[in-house]
Amino acid sequence: MNTKENIEVRLWDYIDGVSSAEERIAIKNLLANNVEWQEAYAELLNMQQMITSSDLEQPSMRFTKNVMDKISDYNASPAVNYLNKKIIWGIGFAFIALIAGFLIYAFAQLNWNASAGGSSYFAFKNLDFSKFFNSTYTSIFLMANTIAGLMLLDRFLAGKKNQA
Image (cartoon, rainbow, N blue to C red; front, side, top):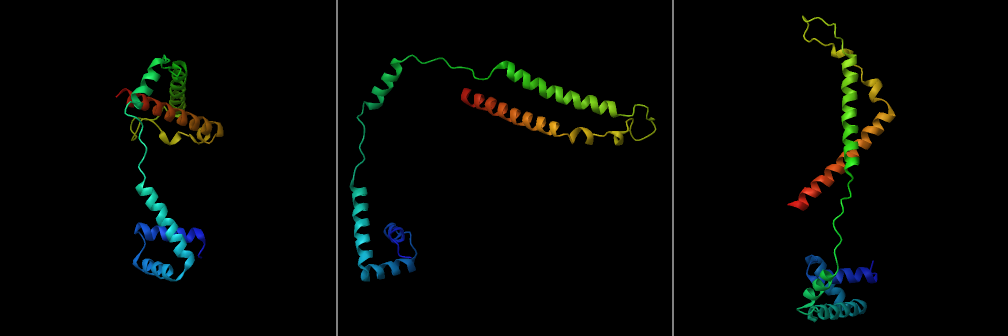
C-alpha cells in the first residue's frame, strides 16, 4: 500500500490541498512518525518550489517576425483540389441510379388494374421488397454509398467552413 508511487500521489494531493480532511490528518501523522514519508515530502516540496520559482524562457520579441519572414521567402505551392469532379459525379450518379432502380422495381410490382372504388388505386400490399433488400450485395452497396455520401458531406461542409 505504501509504495513510492502511492506515497508521492498522496503527498502531491496533500501539497496541492485537494485531499480530504481525514486524509490530511492521516498524512500529518505519517509525516510526524515516518522517516520515508518525511524524506519524500521534503523532496516534493523542494521540487514544487523549483517549479514555482523558475521563470519560463521567452523568445526574443522579434522571433515570430523573423520566422514569418523566412517562411515568406519560400514560394508557396498553390492549393490543390484533391476531390476529382468525375468521382463526385460518379457517386451522385450511383445514388440516382439506386433510387431510380428502387422506383422502377416498385412500379413494376404495382397492380395497375385495381378498381377505383377501393381506398387506393394501387395494391401496395403486393409490393415485395424482401427479395431485393435481403441481398448481401445490396446491403454492402448501400453501406458503401452511405459512407461515401457522409464523407462527401463532411468535405463539403469543411470547405464551406474554410471559406467563411
